[in-house]
Image (cartoon, rainbow, N blue to C red; front, side, top):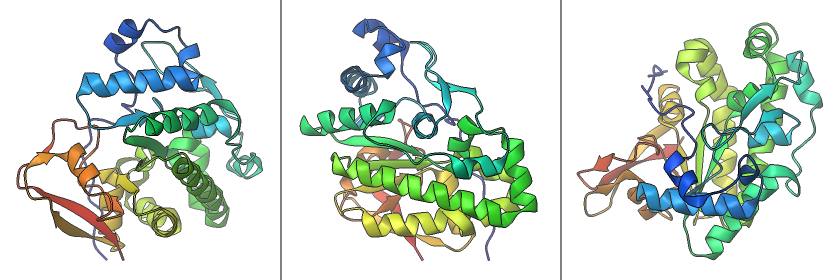
Length: 289
C-alpha cells in the first residue's frame, strides 16, 4: 500500500461568477441562479471572459444538497449560493432524506441550461460534488466524523446513498448531452479527513463510485477528477497514471477535451487552474485498477 499525498490546491470552493460578467449582463440576483436561461447566459459569458474552450455549470457546490432538502442562501452577484441552515441533527438523519427529483427545482434548471448549451454546440462541464461537500449543506461536519469513527456501518450506508445520488446525477447529465464531468470533494480531502479516514473513504466510496461511473458513461464523456481525489486513488493503489501523447503543447483544459474518447478519467491538475499548460504535449490520464 502506498501513501496518500496531498495536493496543495488554491482553488478550493472557487466555483462562482465574476462580477465584471454580472455587471455586463445586467441580470437580477439571486433570481439569475434559479432559471436555466440566465444560467446558460452567464455560463457563455464566463467562457468568453476566461477564454476557455467549454462552458461550466453550475456556479456553486450546493445544488445536490439543496435538491435533497438542504436550505440554501442563494446569495447575490458578489457571492454565489451557499449553505444557510443545517436540516440534519445527527448523521443517521441523512438516510431519511428524499432522493433527488431531477424534474424540479434548481437542479432541473441546471440540466436544462446544460442541454441548451450543448444544443448550441458548446462543450459543457458539469461540476459534481462528492459526499462530504454535499453533506456540508446538510449537517455539521462533526457529526459525520463522529459516526465515521464510531459506527462505520452507518457511514457505509450514508456513502451508499450518496453513491446512488451522484451516479444518477451523472446519468441525467449525459441525457442532456453533458460531455465533461468535474468530480471533486474538497471537504473530504486528506488535509481534513487525515490518512486513516481518507483511505477508508477511497475504499468505501470513491473507488466503488468511479468504477460504476466508468461502466455507465459513454465514450463521448470524460471525467475530470480533482487532483486530491487522484492522489487518494494512487496512494491506495486503486489507480495508476497512463500517459497519452497529444502531439503538441496545449492548455490543460484544451487537452482534456482532446482526450475525450481516449480515456475516461483525467486529473493531474485542477481544472480551475486556467493557466496550466502541458508543454510536452502529454496528458496524464487515470486508469482505475
